[in-house]
Every structure is written in C-alpha cells, then in structure tokens.
Image (cartoon, rainbow, N blue to C red; front, side, top):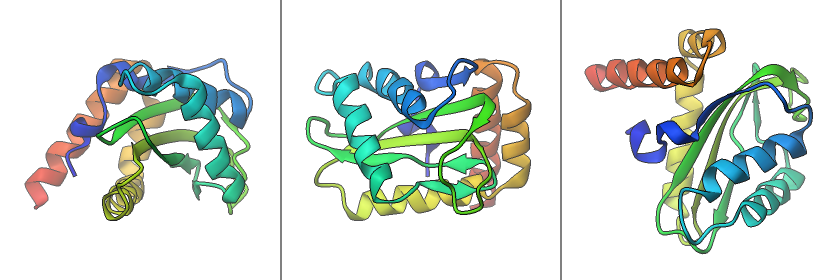
Length: 157
C-alpha cells in the first residue's frame, strides 16, 4: 500500500482540542472535505458517524480506523490524526483512542475498501510506528514517521 496515495500533508494533524468522538469525526470531515470538490464536511462527518453506529472502528491499543463509502468522490482519501488526549471510541479493549486514520472511498469501492482497511490495520499493528506517531511533536513529524514506515515496507516487499 502506498500511503501517500491516500494522504497528503494537509490531512495529517496533531490535534489538542477534541474531547469526543463526534468532535473528532467533525475534524476529519473538515480535513477530507477540502480534498475533493464533491465532498462536504457535513456529509463526511455524517457518514462516518453512521458507520460508527454500526459498530466501533476502534482496533484497540489506542487506534481507530473510521471509514465510510461516499458518492461524490472517485478516489480513496485518508486523514491521520494524533490526539494529545485519548478519547472514548467504544473500542473493544475500552482503551482511549489517540491515533486515527480516517478513510473515505467511492461508493463503488467494495473489494478495494476492504483491502485498504486490511493494509491500514497491518500498518497500525506495528508497535514501533505507533510509538513514533505518539511521540511526534507536530504534523511534520507525523508525516516523517509515515514516510519512514513506507520506506521500510517497500524495502521488505
């Protein structure tokens, strides 16, 4: 998986001012809504929240992968947030979530959607990456950690 096909520096953020799942989903909507003219912040946030009502996208160990399929886009778009304080995300292990990689994909992406989610779950199972993301002091350090992980993943394949 080429992480930089999903995400740009403008959609990578260290966030200190969210306290609830709803607030973080709104922040994700704002980040992704600016990425594609056919998507609005409100629609993205609404669809992510609807998906969360079906079951938490919290993977455990402080990581969540909120995601939704949407009409109005022709490509997969991601956003990465590292929260200063973990929030309740109804994860199965009950740990607060502080690392979120959000994903929106076109409505017709079915297999691709699942493949991307599986690759992201594998990426976030890397404890060293999660540790580096949590230690990042700013957005640039988050991007650097992702790029370093991508470089090592490319070398291993």
